[in-house]
Image 1: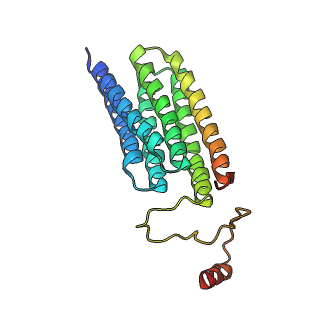
Image 2: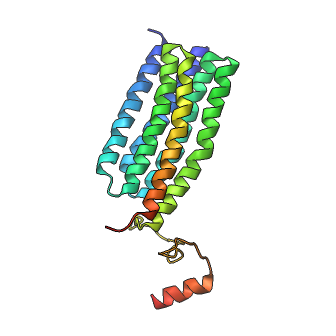
Image 3: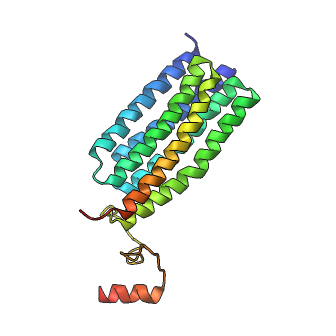
Amino acid sequence: MTDIMIGVLILLGSFFVFVAGFGLLRMPDLYIRMHAATKAGTLGIGFTVAAVAVFFGTLHTVVIALAIFFFFLLTAPVGAHILGRASYVSGVKPWEKTLRDDLAGCYDVNTHQLSNDPEEKQRQTLTG
Amino acid sequence: MSFLDVTVSIGFAMLSLSLVLAFIRLVRGPSLSDRVVALDFIGALAVSFIALYTVSSRNAVYLDAAVVIALIAFLGTVAFARYVEWQKEV
């Protein structure tokens, strides 16, 4: 019974990691790729690590498995946000079918400061 | 060969396939950021591989390596992000 549970967890985990890898290859632009790799990857790692925790069942393993999972849960969004911001500032263009880009014109090119003053944004769109 | 061994083998196969896909993105990636995302994902894949290997070898010691790789992968992503943000146009 436990074996079946562990097997199902392993299959689910490797399936979601595979989906993440597939999305990383197939998605059209950097930001969508990042979304695929981060979310599906975290879910897949959660499942595989849960399989390890169920397989051994000792306190030591369960604590380490939970630590790995929560660490990924915390760092994956932070890392994706840092990298996404850096890419946007350094000029990686979104997909051409993207409908709206709320950050357009909000970043100062030289200082990388974000300003969300609506009047300033309007002036920029009027002049530029 | 028990059910568990079969699922571990299938899991290894899917992870390897996923590693190949991530490597194709790492080589092709039009921008530097795509390569950084692929590298970050390969780090996550390594953690997944180690978790599967822990099950297949029935030895819980390997799980500590997964913790370390998770830490290093995050630090690497942050360092690369700083580099991406402040690199000069060539």
